[in-house]
Length: 309
Ligand code: RIB
Ligand code: CA
Image 1 (cartoon, helix red, strand yellow):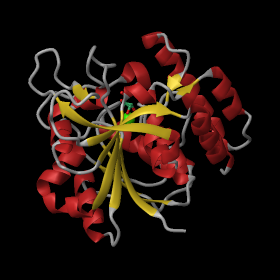
Image 2 (cartoon, rainbow, N blue to C red):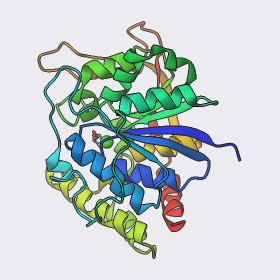
Image 3 (cartoon, protein in one colour):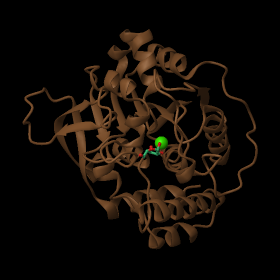
Image 4 (cartoon, rainbow, N blue to C red):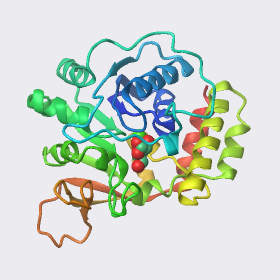
């Protein structure tokens, strides 16, 4: 089987954690590294959480590198109201068996992309600070990046009325990525809100008899509770998991080639992604934008992955 080399840049985060769990269950994906960024929680917590999840799925081989603790120029803001103070509230996970690599996340991205004999796919599921830093420090890595499959943005917001959290947290970094000329697949809120872990889904997860599924069930119960409280959702949208699902089953996704521009100047609109669904701006296409998810197919893929543990 040919494997696809990926680097997961994330801010675990309940949905980031489940994305790692799905990726680790798929033999066609070779996780070169997990790089962490401040987002859902401070960098120390997101890094600790990434290490804990690697232990959960018995992947001590996956390099975990701590990345940016702050956005490029803005003040850091986190999301304890959604992910809890630890960033991964709900299940009790043991202290990690190891520390992070000691190499900055952006440097790990640069090193591994340069070393790889095949192009590398990068899956950012937090603020894009590390990606922007890597592209600034070593723009030549663009020659060996297959594509960027990111969770972020959308035609509406969840942190402001028009801005989604990952983009809002570091709009300047996001603009650098969207203006990079790299092939980008955008899993924005328009499609990630279709991937709802409802009570029925959580019941299915809880019928799987292994520890990983048990922990995922507990993650989803917590995540669904905060989404109910904050947004009155009847389920937890597992946003980040769609980046991994797209890499292994693109047939589950309907996308549209569009221009996505990031607003960085607006007093009230900074972090907004202007998704030109109808080509009215005349700006060139720079992204595949996720529109529709085969929801049944997605959850079938997720459940099958959990059963493998
Ligand atoms: O807006 C949703 C995104 O913000 C997800 O990646 C979630 O994990 C948080 O990082
Ligand atoms: Ca995330």
